[in-house]
Length: 238
Image (cartoon, rainbow, N blue to C red):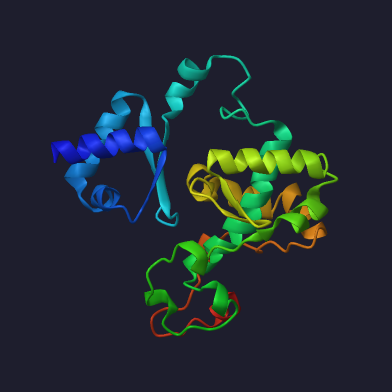
């Protein structure tokens, strides 16, 4: 166990994220003793494991109390410790909203992209899906057309997208933007979802033709049908 712990800790520090399907990561997620020792070793250097069961990757981040000692007491790191400017952070949140919000709704309700809007009698029994089966993509040209005027224009957005890709938040292939390994790990859905859906950004996204879910996906999950299917109120949410 000692060698695996040392190896996994080193890999997390060197690579910043690892897929949940990785053999050592899977052990950390199911072996309580292994996980406790991994958490202890990361905590010894001021880090914590980022583990979201709905995300396809795990990652590492500073513990909250370490932010000021590491980045200083000034305001420089308050918005981002990754060197992102305000408009780049805004673009990141927009992409998160358009990719992760609908993805989480599919995951919680056990739907996939190919059966959006369809009723699945046994959907609640499915394991949580990850990857392309539930995570949609965005056309880069459409994103620039919809939000370019608000985020500095095409050139500035193209540079920002390159930076977000290098940091691991998104992937770019042939003009298509898809979820990167950190997009669903580094941003907290439970904190952000309601602020976006019921906040100003929700109105901005809707005005650009991107309809947001009406509710937090976990609120939808609370009213899914019982096993006998007697909850009629949930029909429209599946």
